[in-house]
Length: 384
Image 1 (cartoon, helix red, strand yellow):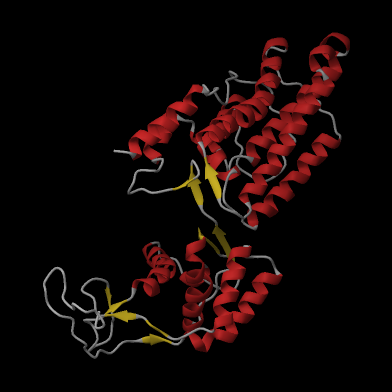
Image 2: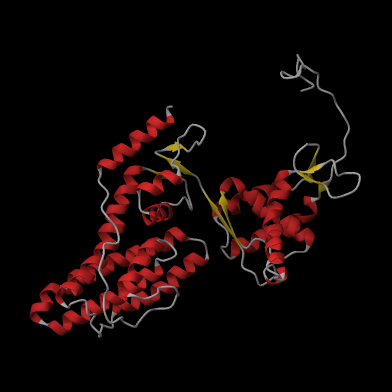
């Protein structure tokens, strides 16, 4: 402002003044070597996403300058040192510390020992957008290191951006989908599924109403829901809801057991999208198994084999319901109700229930006319 020709505030008309002030600095340069080692370890063990690796490398390559962490502002957290209490801690420095201070507050309220949760055995995950990467890979690790608090952030789950109908989301311009609106019109599991399977994990992604509705109808309803419905309706109609007791041991169930490990490892490493893709790839193979085995024909030619096929499909349904519970829990509750059981572990289910309760559809078809209606509503709302 000193270099302006007309140096006057547009609000109060006063000219700017140059004043000396004192500030506290955090010596980030002292942590340069430590953070380089920390980054190399994260890259070697593939604990961070590529965007976090690349951006952090750039910052470290340029060298970390020491930065002022206080401001002469009226609002904010005061510096807790006599003579400096009128100064405030700058928000980018104190915000990340909330991870620790909030957990300390929680532990004190419940009379827990905070070191039971923050120690070198703790596995930590930090989930955020790519614009927050340096706060979690440089600033927060440097603060923790200075305080000698473990662990440093272990898994950096840094997503790319999500657009809406190929345009940047803008809440101020109302180019957005509001949760209170979408949850009233569509199944919560449909929303959870699409946002996960379409997540911007490795590159920017787009939310389109066309893809959302087609995804629901083809994958949730057409693939997953259809496999469950036709299996259970068959048992309900031809076996009076009595579940056969003997199932087929073979490749389809072997792959199901292996799926727990595959999906579990992907979830543990923060790859939710890929985990869900693996499950739905298996669902497609389960539908193929049903079609190839033709239980409707076996009912006439080999009733015992028919029962074994249906029992195998029930085992698949129970395990899929359990495996999908972290992703789409409301449909999982419907499966629990139909079998009068609980699906709340990560262990392969091999025991068959005795009888089905009332069979109900997991999902309803969404009318394709909704695509144009939703796009039009979005355009009209954003133009107001």
